Length: 245
Image 1 (cartoon, one colour):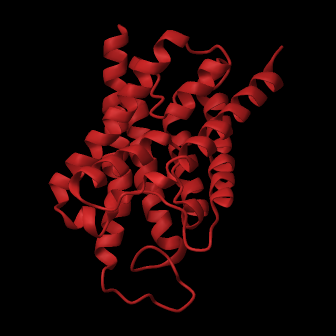
Image 2 (tube, rainbow, N blue to C red):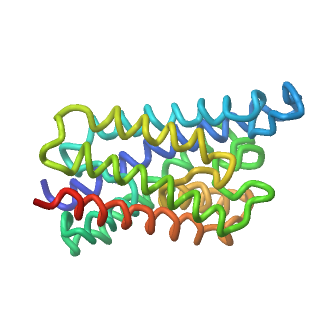
């Protein structure tokens, strides 16, 4: 496949991830507007509160990621994430000349996903739902958020290495395993850092919110670059070391 076609596949896959995954987070906030939490301990992002909302959002991401991997993985490898692309380049599993085109395609796909979700759902998706933009939750410091993103992306990249990159992995399982891994991570760390795990997933809603008059959150963006990229690099280097003959 040409680089142009593979980059286009990355754009489409990341579009799907953000439209349906981040869109689910925005819808959860829209549904909960004016809703009363079931009890004082359920301090979550939506009407259900706590882990119930995060599980629902995580499953939306899981399904979107699995669908993208099965649909487009044979074309581009379905990185869908600049942190994954950078980590694969670091262990010489991806050519340096193709890193920038892949990342640009991922950022463009995420931005398109957020803009089209806003067009689909209306301005409440921006003003109330924030298009599912990620930010540390109250009481969470930037260092804590970076650590949560690092550990979450470490697990994600470790699974990617084992189920998708390693030639010894059983075929056909990558989509469902990677998708469910993301869903589980989001359920756990969603109320800490917002559970981005992906610089493109955060970039798209930030840019669309900025363009459409929503909250301007670029001051948090470094969290969702440093944490995911560091976590993915550590996992890829560790797996490469552990599995080397």
